[in-house]
Image 1 (cartoon, rainbow, N blue to C red):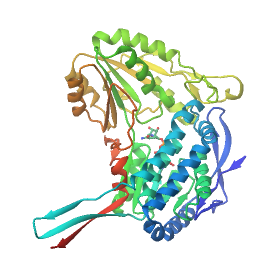
Image 2 (cartoon, rainbow, N blue to C red; image 1 turned 60 degrees about the horizontal axis):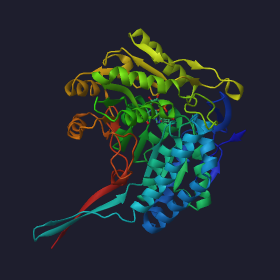
Image 3 (cartoon, protein in one colour; image 1 turned 180 degrees about the horizontal axis):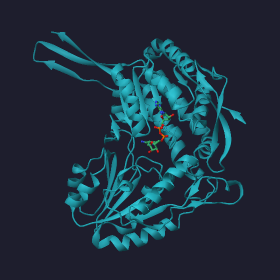
Image 4 (cartoon, helix red, strand yellow; image 1 turned 30 degrees about the vertical axis):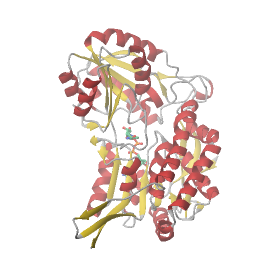
Amino acid sequence: MEHIRNYINGELVDPRSGVWLPSFEPATGAVHVRVPDSGVADVNAAAESAAAAFPQWSKTPAEERSRLLLRIAELIERRANELAADESRDNGKPLRLARAVDIPRAAKNFRFFATAILHSSTDAHATDATAVNYTLRQPIGVAGCISPWNLPLYLFTWKIAPALAAGNTVVAKPSEITPLTAHRLAEICIEAGLPRGVLNIVHGTGADVGEAITKHPGIPAISFTGGTHTGARIARTAAPMFKKLSLELGGKNPTIIFADCDFDATLDTVVRSAFSNQGEICLCGSRIFIERPLYSRFRDAFVQRVSALRVGDPLDEKTDQGALVSEQHLEKVLGYVALAREEGGTVLCGGERVALNGRCREGWFMSPAVIEGLPFSCRTNQEEIFGPVATLMPFDDEEEVTSMANSTPYGLAASIWTSDLSRAHNMAARLHSGIVWINCWMLRDLRTPFGGMKQSGIGREGGWEALHFFTEAKNICVKL
Ligand code: TXE
């Protein structure tokens, strides 16, 4: 069985503890790799090597940093099939999805920031005829990057690429639940010739490794994606240390469908926005509001489509819904279906554990659930479930649906479906969401600000936002 290793100072090394944790294949429920049970000593070694590498890396010309990051992108693409298979095995998502989305986006993250730094400019401000000011953006130093299990390599590289591109060195931690492709990235960085210490990957639990990164005095910036509860915990530690913080947290995203929408296009996309990756994407539209004249027609068509989604072996090309990432998470999501029933909801389809045959008979599968009849204010409609569960609610006018959509503690993403674009633009401006899609979902331009408000986090990733997060702005004023 493969023992994953830490990547510290350019080498693959065992955890100082000499202890490994089991990591499971969700489709079979069996241990498939072992992940280092690292701790403070491993994080300190990583932070030390990152600090030692910083002076040279931060002075490396942008063109050379770009070349190395493009080389990493190239190697990711060359190993795409292997990486997709690893990602699917590790997370439980359909292989088809890992191949089409996760791995290509990981390469794209490196390409995007590798080229961005070749075109960056800065501000200058002339103060009448007396002075000129220019803004110097300098890398922060050692950046801490902590990522979750739902889109493992995709979100891991979404932080690492801009941090390195901006001239920082990095101590990164993937989720201990899905460590495999982060390990492959270490292998790729070694092959690409990334200088030792520039990127360090320390595997282990959030409580041990995650906390140690957050607390480390030599890591002045933390970029985190994960649960709101964990984000708050990180903020409590990092804020008094005056660390820069980027927190991409949970969501409870509204999908708002008006009667004048393009019915077929809306139906096709809303099935995907609710259940892609088993609903384990912070951007998934889990609360679906439908204008009352369209409600019955959309509900019936939606239930029919969701009932037809194939729950199966992630390696099977026909599979639409793979396994949930852990037994604990499966129980959590099934618990919310039970809660929905207690709160008066009607489960129109799915919401049951699914027992497959063959190699997946012990896997963590469930049928995607559609629930109606719940008030917008109940727990099922207020709390992040992060699984294949969507609720349907009718609405009568824009005021009502805007108020319901904005009623949760979250504010990450939303989608609006209507042919009345002036209505769409007005509503988009009023929604408590950092990202609003109109007549589309998950259509991504990496230059755009990415992130949410309220309990969905602090700060934005993507484009210049990411490069500005990973740099300090200094104003230099020259008297004329
Ligand atoms: O996130 P966690 P998990 C939501 C979703 C999910 C919940 C928990 O609701 O059910 O978060 O998911 C590390 N200090 N999202 O368990 O626990 C941990 O090891 C520092 C939304 O994945 O937040 C992992 O590497 N680090 C999210 C990472 O943080 C700590 C995507 C995320 O773990 C830590 C995933 C600590 N005290 C889950 N505790 C999104 N917005 O996309 C844990 N970690």
